[in-house]
Length: 590
Image (tube, rainbow, N blue to C red; front, side, top):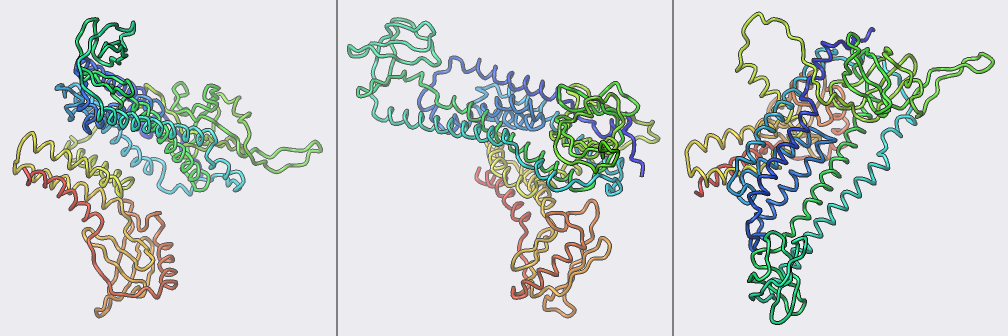
């Protein structure tokens, strides 16, 4: 069949997104603005041992460190950096130890970044929903050259650079945390046996980072971390006669500064690992499964060692860049005697692609997402081993036709809201609501402490608990093949069917039917209809026919797993109950 053309209008639909450059500028402006205000407002605040050793101060330092680390993360992963900056600034605006009485300095940039994050999330859901419609829901109609396993396997091996780099960053983060722990413990031991006395400043260093004080006829060097000292000042100090260590009571060293290094290294290390894992997973799907394909134009770009992907009717503006191109299949050649030679496989520099200038190529893969793609030019096959890169400052806008009727804003909002909830549930519903549970309790406690008990908070608590339940429910598959039982996940209750009770499993078209003996006349029956909007039958998304085969095999191999059919609360129900408790217990205790 003839693959569809990548026109400018189609590219606008597939790649419509918030420009990465705007995300980077917004994150940098928001984080640096909030950090500057925080630094100015705490510049003359006395640092006492009680303050810097408190758990709230450590939490504040960790949040500020994560906010600063987002500046580095947003360069390579704009969406991840945006989320990290939004969360850290938002939580920082709720902690008085950070905002120092100016919560707006943190909450205003957090709100602006949240708007950008939600916009990018909605556009991402829209792109993924439109892609099957615009490209065709059946990618098997596109013929992609099949590559041998010895060509595919090396592309899926994690590079030595990524492995060593991520390990080094993780070690640096662990070392920085250990450094903070050592300094904090040493300071606690010092203060436990130190003596408090009055001393006189006799000299100040040129860099104003330390001063010499006279105490009991001895001259000791005292660090000045936050407050300036002048000669002749009387200072209350805490000192150890055994070690000679001395510090001002109102200006102690803050050991949490090293957490900035830990946050930078840890965030970059984790981000590198996740990015590498996502790229390798995308390469695996690209090289082993049929993909939708588009006919595009391609131009070589030496800077990225790849090609610019262009629309067929607009060769002046790149749609995306496919970097780090390697050739994995070369067209058949001829020997000197004129005889044909079969195709050659392997990994070679993309020499033929270096001459491309507006060449017509076939690009296979999800061109609207930041993933690798496969490029075919004649019988030559190339793979972009790094994710697609999109223009930093330009987002193609879809061309819209004149509307024949006025759209309903509420209906559009409802569709967008449901699409976002469904997307979050599909990708992270099994674990994300559990991770957010402590944050829900903290937020509820803070709201109750500010507003006091209010019956309206009950409705809000039940609403958020229901949202968490819905997200969790979407993240679980319909069936779970356990060693002792087949588990059917319901809205509120799970049905556990021992394998000895399973009587039959068959699939017809998109309907899976499972029969079981529940002790009642005629037995029970599960009828599961698979639709594009339904949950996957099993976790890996296998079709009903394959799931029926798995059930029959498990039923034969595990026939000794006996018992009775039981009902139990589903994981989503348990999660919803935990959210209700986390949101309403602070209200009841107030």
